[in-house]
Image (cartoon, rainbow, N blue to C red; front, side, top):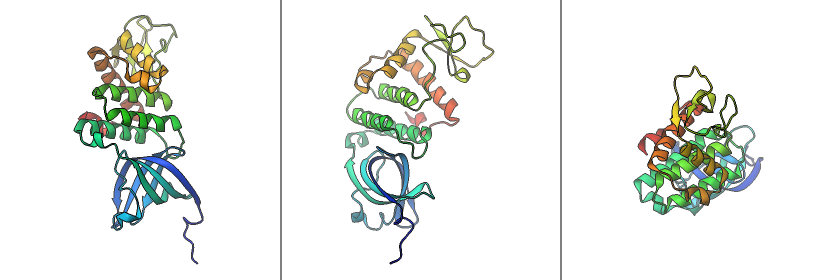
Length: 252
């Protein structure tokens, strides 16, 4: 019997959230999953468009699936032999803004996380975010909490505890300088002309979200001023460090 290159590879079973997918040739689809055990994984599902009964899922975005795939050591693209739907998040799909917010998070995870680097905390973060997105009305707050936590968990978090130059505590309003990676106090000189002013309340909100679990973070009240500062600061910070804009952000 002739064996394929996939049949000689390690078989992996895990749970994954679909970040994106697209048609490939006439009958197949290529999907990117963020998996529970192995991080971001790219796979091809051969024949899924020709025979829907072959798989128990249509691999829609932000669905949770149980997948089995043949891991290839020669390529980042693996052969998915089994994909069974576990969670669909139907209430999100019924609401346009909730759907946009879900897709924004998926695009952000795909942009930040490298291929096949396991991170169980980020996997749980995506699940918590999608679950909250089904019912919580304040979608803007959920997006900000997700942004802050994924920056923290991926190691990109801005320096907010003190001034990045003199390391002294900042008591009032401060300058948030992208190139410095955080706050600069009024006493420290800087030649950087591009900066934003950020209030003590906004800094305190970010630190609270970084230091607390998901439930406590989303229960935090945010004023309109804090939300405005978070939107400007976080979006610019992400764009600066990723060196690209998240396409979905402009629709939120």
